[in-house]
Image: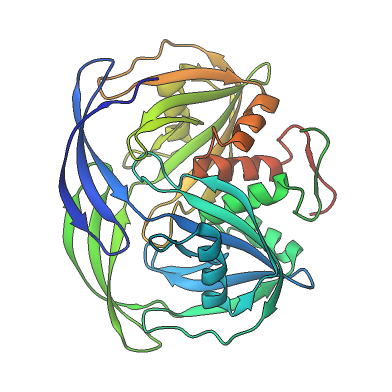
Length: 187
Length: 187
């Protein structure tokens, strides 16, 4: 399948957490020229983090897209030049005060390939211990919570947890054989 | 947890598939005033669709966010006033030519509550039959493919399938007991 021919980019705008640009693209099938918005966001990470006694470290914060609180796994943006695994460990300790003895990549997704250019790397952090106090800046308002797996799963089923990137992380957790109670007979 | 106080919206811009606006918000914790971009997108749907003989109906298309082909389940936008289930059935037949005898809601996610306002409803369509020819407009270039479950799972593991909203759909498929080979001992 042939990519569309790139003609030009225009109207690049800085929105702080991402840039938008408009690409002019030409269809290889019909020759039709389209203008499409692309959201250029940095590489993102999120982390399924478990304490030494198997509790899940979640963060609850007001999310301005929906104007309401959202219960999620720790997540954030990779800094320019930063290794995504380093970013995951950094976001975990910055948001929650927990540090992990073991971090591994579960999967990598495109948050939205239809109009976003970026990738999100999903990690599993185990053996987490509380090592620091959380320091929030003026723009943050994060509450750290420890959840047992059955309660977390119930919160997904009730819709309390429904950030798509968190739900995607749970798929990879199951597929890695790391989700309590889930098993595979094939694959 | 208290939402931030909404002060005003400004700079609303139309990007065709979404609008952006800048909200001024005041922190209930610190009184600090923030300006945050919100992407106003319509309600979205996607559909895990299976044929009568249990094959999965996927679509491959160039996605302009990543400038590359992406293998996905059928998906689209809900029209104003349209029922999401109706939109799911409509997108399925428009993109693939298949119609389903049975459609049910698997889950509802926020694609990205950090800056997007919208929801994506995820459906399971079973017993799908090819009833129409696919008609693509000039801006589309969609290839319809039938995949057996083990191959689909292998494509997720290899990274060929990695649209986060599709991976989220697979979580709900597993949790509904509808993913071949996956089972739960509790929950």
